[in-house]
View 1 (cartoon, rainbow, N blue to C red):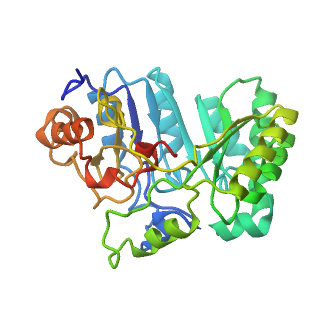
View 2 (cartoon, one colour):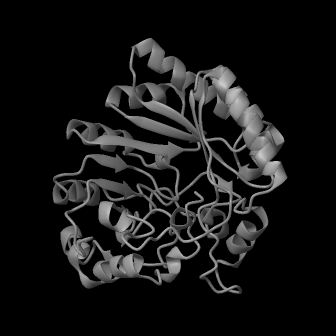
Length: 333
């Protein structure tokens, strides 16, 4: 029996900023007005309050829609999290990952860093990650690998994340070979996170909904199979661990005995504005809110009726509307 109110989560994803220096094609940030890096930054008081309210926390992701390296106190948050004995890391576009920043993060105790690379050629990558330059990002990634070696540190664990789409899937084998030469031995391929089919076709999510419909690889096809097969061969030769998502159709993962997703029992996502959401796949403060930390404590929100009802619907079905188009819920992420 899955409890309606489980123990407080041991994993938390915290959006340290909603600001970003890029306008990536598949990200909601592209389709919203720009956010100033100061107004979009998470308040440090809220950060410390959450650490205190979740005494059994053992894994913290400092990331959301924005670029974490834009937060002026990110290094302090990494250091404090590490000192509390909590595993800490984040995803980054790595455009701001200078060699000195890498050294500071390694010394602060960063446990893991995932770098987004969605193409092996500059034209493809830069058309997706608008505002980035591939040579600079590769140099930053290589510097991070070199800093780890120079300091004799095992952490942070470095992973490259490739968001697979129709426009870039053919470059996956070359990308695996490229990062392997740099010294990265872990590549994760993921699908687009959501189809946004629960939103108004003419509303504020119209553009990203259309993009997902045109670019997602949720249906198996020859081009994807060919790219995956070639990438696996390259990974094997290069000593790279390659994780590929399923692309054999989208069916709800819920079974008779369990939910299609365990996030609302195991973890939580909090936006930079203090909105508590069930997971990181939602995108957008207006999509679903289970409570606001400006009004109540996290333990109160965790045990309150909106969270209980959200868990109940995931467990018994039909799922909440926001889950219906989610790649994680369908097992295709």
